[in-house]
Length: 129
Image (cartoon, rainbow, N blue to C red; front, side, top):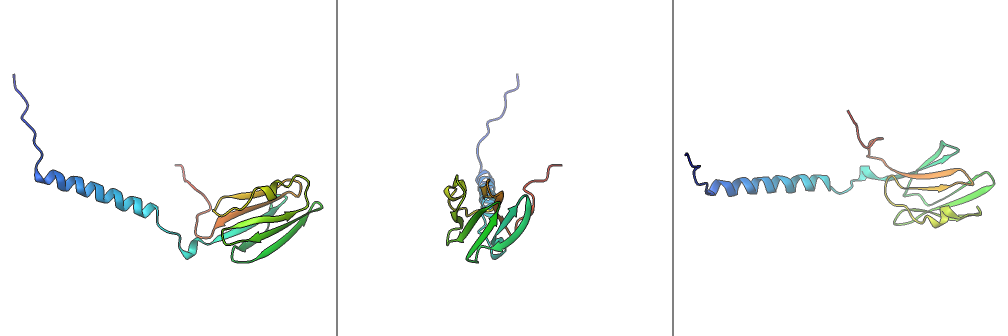
């Protein structure tokens, strides 16, 4: 019966392992690249499902009124929040601050939705083929 030869690590094996680890670190670093100026956040305000306003988060305060409800938005250093609303449930005020693209605040009585979007992001997340 033929026995298999003994396998021993050689110096080139360590080089291959180091190359694989280095390429994995480079890929991880590319995925976690810091935001650039092109990734500035924009607030998109929709009333009754139609976009009515779009503004950069560098701007200060805005007020919207619809269905007898008034919302006052405030831009802070961290993000955007509904500072004050005269709707009965106050869910939009309790939502708190939003600061990342894709997050939103909804006021159901007023039928107003405020969503954050990134200026540099594509309008879709994934393309399935």
